[in-house]
Image (cartoon, rainbow, N blue to C red; front, top):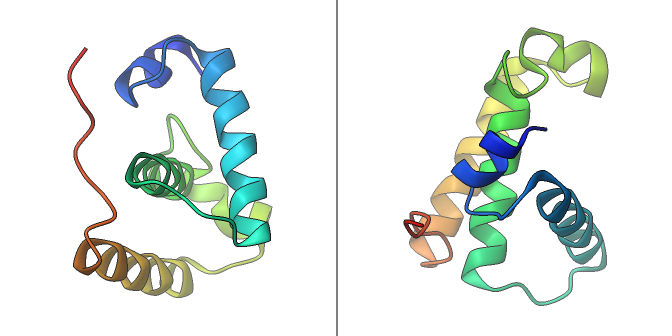
Length: 95
């Protein structure tokens, strides 16, 4: 994680992004309430972690997570559709 990626995702620094992503992970695990910003950040982090060779797992995704690309992209598309239809994601605000 870099400060550039954090800024791209709307955070004021990599430390704040890391802290927030830990909070989001715990909230998702506990099925706690999430805001539109929470859903947007969680989805963006997942997309980056899965697809990006530069910022995420990239080609190593199946090795790291034990999930094949086809299975993951199918799940990811399903989540994207559900979040979009529910109005739970939006483009990040400009700084």
